[in-house]
Length: 220
Image (cartoon, rainbow, N blue to C red; front, side):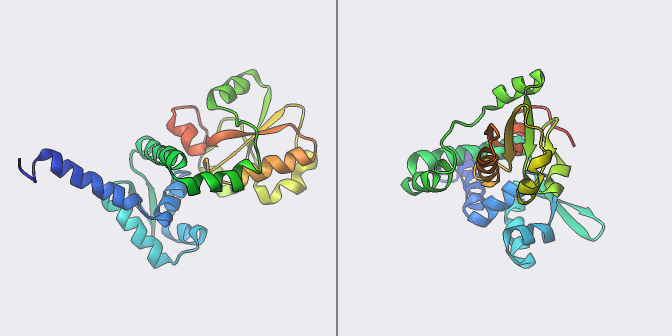
């Protein structure tokens, strides 16, 4: 059997995609551009990398057809290609890792479950509560990410402003907080702060990208 048959060639290209995912910085970059289109310089600031290093990682993601650039004046803005499929791929990677890698399980218990052992609110349940008007939806991401896209009816109070804004937050309803995704600590910290002040608060099971990828309504 040929070692360069169609199956082998497909596996070779799939291996290139897998190799593009095989770096923690590139996974973080994908999470960030899943929130919306971002420029190279902004991604560098948010990841703590140099612009040159960020650009190199983006080129790897571009060659693997996971991200694509768009020129806007002097800036290059990057977004996901086929974002629904890319987000699903990242979610599948997360599930396999959580199930099979003991260190990931330990980190989840130490940093996530210890902050909030209560079950998160599933997307379908949140959608029903939004339609019924029985929930206050809180987006705790930075304001510029909120402007790029958000869940319908969400109010934006970035985590670093939440303590000061508690007095003006309507608490007649249950509060559901969300952020960038399942490994983003912003919503965990927000829920802990709200409960400390006597607010009934829960987390969404994941974040804005997963909600959008599921075909659920968004604004912005």
